[in-house]
Length: 207
Ligand SMILES: CC(C)(COP(=O)(O)OP(=O)(O)OC[C@H]1O[C@@H](n2cnc3c(N)ncnc32)[C@H](O)[C@@H]1OP(=O)(O)O)[C@@H](O)C(=O)NCCC(=O)NCCS
View 1 (cartoon, protein in one colour):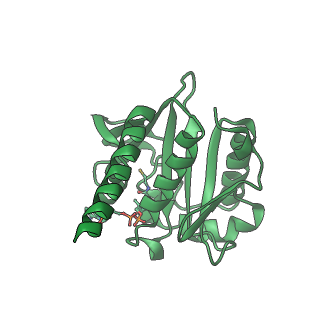
View 2: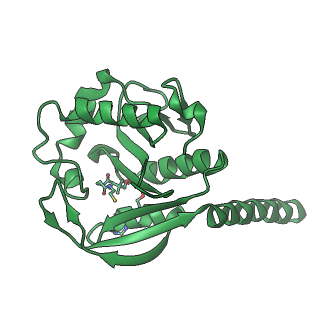
């Protein structure tokens, strides 16, 4: 499902400000610190609150296992100048009995509002679609999470429907908006962005 190259733990993606890399055991203290925040956990289906001892190690092991099996691509986010300091996570996970994958992401509280989630998601999409993934990427956001909705919209996701799925770590159903992006739509956006770039440089050249 994901390219062979991403199944090795030396795989990483660099953005202008960030690294997206495989998680390692030594990331557990950073993960525990960030994921212990209720503001983060509450917006997700699977991050428990309070965050129990051992949960970060389980999270790391689970992502690594899925990455090796090609069933997902789960990466932690670090500043590119401090690759040992985890500030967030972003990943795709195969949906059972489907060719589609589900996107998830979070950022540590002190790092909100700097465009990091948008940058990380955009780069992951580039890597995955760029390597030829041809399924749909879906994502859900709680209806009280406009920042996450914005991250998806800025990356070209389209709203498809609403529902109230059971969220295991929340212990109850919650209303969510569902979003989707496919390869054709993603490619169309890349072409449009490229043309826009050409147009702007042409305008710049004649003024
Ligand atoms: C959602 C989350 C990942 C966003 O991370 P971030 O790095 O702060 O996001 P960005 O800075 O890239 O973008 C946030 C966008 O939301 C907008 N935004 C932030 N708060 C908002 C609000 N209350 N209402 C509307 N828009 C809001 C920002 O202006 C920005 O949009 P812009 O770039 O067009 O200005 C982060 O808040 C988080 O980790 N939340 C908890 C976990 C979570 O929700 N995960 C996603 C589960 S679906």
